[in-house]
Length: 97
Image (cartoon, rainbow, N blue to C red; front, side):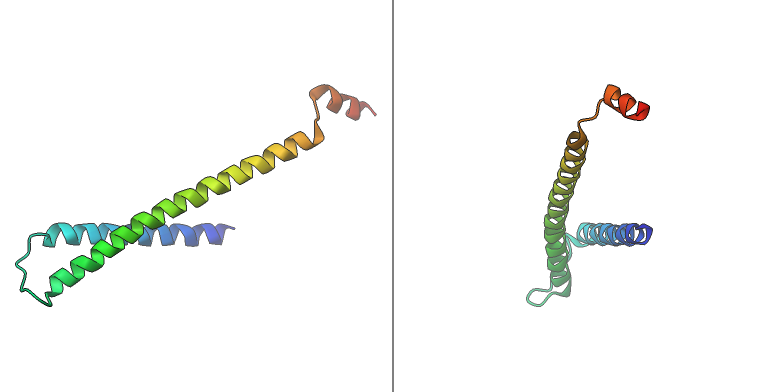
Protein backbone atom coordinates (compact mmCIF):
# COMPACT_ATOMS: atom_id res chain seq x y z
CA UNK A 1 0.00 0.00 0.00
CA UNK A 2 2.78 2.41 0.90
CA UNK A 3 4.66 1.51 -2.27
CA UNK A 4 1.58 2.21 -4.40
CA UNK A 5 1.14 5.58 -2.72
CA UNK A 6 4.81 6.41 -3.35
CA UNK A 7 4.56 5.45 -7.04
CA UNK A 8 1.37 7.49 -7.42
CA UNK A 9 3.00 10.51 -5.82
CA UNK A 10 6.03 10.20 -8.09
CA UNK A 11 3.84 9.94 -11.20
CA UNK A 12 1.86 12.99 -10.10
CA UNK A 13 5.09 14.91 -9.53
CA UNK A 14 6.46 13.94 -12.95
CA UNK A 15 3.17 14.93 -14.57
CA UNK A 16 3.17 18.29 -12.79
CA UNK A 17 6.78 18.96 -13.81
CA UNK A 18 5.99 18.13 -17.44
CA UNK A 19 3.04 20.51 -17.39
CA UNK A 20 5.16 23.23 -15.78
CA UNK A 21 7.94 22.75 -18.33
CA UNK A 22 5.45 22.95 -21.20
CA UNK A 23 3.96 26.15 -19.82
CA UNK A 24 7.44 27.63 -19.31
CA UNK A 25 8.55 26.76 -22.84
CA UNK A 26 5.39 28.20 -24.36
CA UNK A 27 5.84 31.38 -22.37
CA UNK A 28 9.49 31.75 -23.36
CA UNK A 29 9.06 30.94 -27.06
CA UNK A 30 5.60 32.38 -27.70
CA UNK A 31 6.90 35.34 -29.72
CA UNK A 32 9.78 33.62 -31.56
CA UNK A 33 10.97 34.46 -35.04
CA UNK A 34 9.35 31.77 -37.13
CA UNK A 35 11.38 30.41 -40.04
CA UNK A 36 8.22 29.38 -41.87
CA UNK A 37 7.37 25.86 -42.99
CA UNK A 38 9.07 23.22 -40.83
CA UNK A 39 9.96 25.55 -37.96
CA UNK A 40 11.32 23.42 -35.11
CA UNK A 41 10.11 25.85 -32.43
CA UNK A 42 6.58 25.79 -33.84
CA UNK A 43 6.66 21.99 -33.81
CA UNK A 44 7.70 21.93 -30.15
CA UNK A 45 5.06 24.53 -29.31
CA UNK A 46 2.44 22.28 -30.93
CA UNK A 47 3.64 19.34 -28.84
CA UNK A 48 3.39 21.52 -25.71
CA UNK A 49 -0.14 22.57 -26.68
CA UNK A 50 -1.12 18.93 -27.15
CA UNK A 51 0.41 18.01 -23.78
CA UNK A 52 -1.43 20.81 -22.00
CA UNK A 53 -4.73 19.97 -23.72
CA UNK A 54 -4.37 16.29 -22.93
CA UNK A 55 -3.17 17.08 -19.42
CA UNK A 56 -6.28 19.12 -18.75
CA UNK A 57 -8.44 16.23 -19.93
CA UNK A 58 -6.42 13.81 -17.79
CA UNK A 59 -6.91 16.01 -14.72
CA UNK A 60 -10.65 16.16 -15.34
CA UNK A 61 -10.81 12.39 -15.73
CA UNK A 62 -8.79 11.92 -12.53
CA UNK A 63 -11.14 14.25 -10.65
CA UNK A 64 -14.18 12.30 -11.86
CA UNK A 65 -12.59 8.97 -10.92
CA UNK A 66 -11.68 10.33 -7.48
CA UNK A 67 -15.23 11.60 -6.93
CA UNK A 68 -16.70 8.21 -7.90
CA UNK A 69 -14.29 6.40 -5.57
CA UNK A 70 -15.14 8.70 -2.67
CA UNK A 71 -18.88 8.24 -3.28
CA UNK A 72 -18.50 4.46 -3.51
CA UNK A 73 -16.48 4.37 -0.29
CA UNK A 74 -18.99 6.58 1.50
CA UNK A 75 -21.86 4.40 0.31
CA UNK A 76 -20.07 1.23 1.42
CA UNK A 77 -19.39 2.64 4.88
CA UNK A 78 -22.98 3.86 5.16
CA UNK A 79 -24.35 0.47 4.18
CA UNK A 80 -22.04 -1.27 6.64
CA UNK A 81 -23.12 1.06 9.46
CA UNK A 82 -26.82 0.67 8.67
CA UNK A 83 -26.53 -3.08 8.24
CA UNK A 84 -26.25 -3.81 11.96
CA UNK A 85 -28.63 -1.09 13.23
CA UNK A 86 -26.86 -0.99 16.57
CA UNK A 87 -27.56 1.71 19.11
CA UNK A 88 -25.69 2.46 22.30
CA UNK A 89 -28.45 0.76 24.32
CA UNK A 90 -28.40 -2.39 22.21
CA UNK A 91 -24.63 -2.58 22.44
CA UNK A 92 -24.79 -2.29 26.26
CA UNK A 93 -27.39 -5.03 26.40
CA UNK A 94 -25.18 -7.24 24.25
CA UNK A 95 -22.25 -6.64 26.61
CA UNK A 96 -24.35 -7.62 29.62
CA UNK A 97 -25.24 -11.01 28.07
